[in-house]
Amino acid sequence: MLAQQRALAHGRAPFVNNFTVRNVARKACRTRAILMDKECYTIPAAPDLIPDGPWSKVEGGVCAAKGFKATGVHAGLRASGKKADLALVVADAPATAAGTFTTNVMCAAPVLYCKDVLSRRSAVRAVMTNAGQANAATGTQGYEDAVATATALAQALGVSTDDILLQSTGVIGRRMKMESFLPAIPQVVGTLGGSGEDAHRAAVAITTTDLVSKEAALRVTLPGSGAVVTVGGMCKGSGMIHPNMATMLGVVTCDAEVEAGVWSGIVKRAAVASFNAITVDGDTSTNDCVIGLASGAAGNPRIADPASPDAALLEGAVTALMQGLAKSIAWDGEGATCLVEIEVVGAQSDADARVIARSVAGSSLAKSAIFGHDPNWGRIAAAAGYSGIIFDQAELGVRLGSMQLMEAGQPLPFDKAAANKYLKDTCAVHGTVQIGVRVGKGPGRGMAWGCDLSYDYVKINAEYTT
Image 1: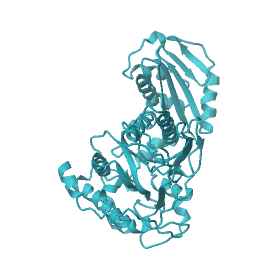
Image 2 (image 1 turned 180 degrees about the horizontal axis):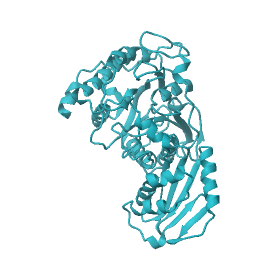
Image 3 (image 1 turned 90 degrees about the vertical axis):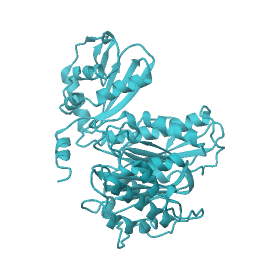
């Protein structure tokens, strides 16, 4: 089937190096195919959850890095409503590209398409994302639809189809609304811009059941060259969150000049420490995908050594950005009243610690107890125990907030009313519940993020298509 899919992509538009974006009024735009009224973007932003470090937080999302433009419009792809549903991120010149994808066997057509492109190319020009239909479990016709949208965008931009990457989100098993999608593509290209407002429109357009948009940007000064580099990003996700590769959907932009292999390693390792460390409901999506683009527009000397100080700081910034975005997904989990942060120490390796932390984050019993403000810490201990990682239970310790509940395998007396109040007060402000787990004296340390499990999660997903 893959050979047939690749054959579908052979019709390619001519490559044009000097494509420029046409400037149009974007504040209120109505055409036959797209809509950009204020009502298309009425969604608040997620809180700032990026960890502190040797970087500064800046505005601008995916447009903060030099060399990128973005937009988001309503093209009528959702089942109803006026919320924006078609996003576009375009690099001014070919940008070094890296991607991580779902391991779900039923991966969506856009995932197959992107994996094929990136198996043959290390640079691309654009990422287009639609919301409304996942284009997963849609067979050969779904792949043909993906190719048709990539071809239409390539023609509108004057580039090759191999310069295009695709993402889709929405209901599985339904084809995209091609009668609305294809006419919108040439018009959405005309709305591209480089402002933070344009980046925000794109961040809204990729959301589904999200209650908030998710975008962020960081700026760092590379120690080796002194060059200033910016990393920006956006993502979406609220339910069907248990990635085993990267994220739900995400796009990261960077203006550093970096060798393709180095950039790919940075993106993949950052995904492991961020999007792969969150869970909302234990379901791994068919469409999980994060794309990283590096434009090189910062003008720094090319980063070719993954062990160099410049590469290390760039990776730290990309990881911090992805962690902030990933945490915003868990914070916005369907029906959630809090973010849950689990830190595991004393494991034999960082990888082991992350597995244990994620096991706790994914425990339906622990999540339900947190929603009910019940400090039932035995559920945390049990989840650590069935993680698959071997440790000595005589060394297990469990902490809730600042309260130690178990130490060296022994339960400790604690103020249950105070623990209940900690959970109740934290959930009342949609804050972060802190859980600490010690499994030994090893050097391994890892974190994971999740959320509580409420009645509303069931309501949302019981009626998702009805």
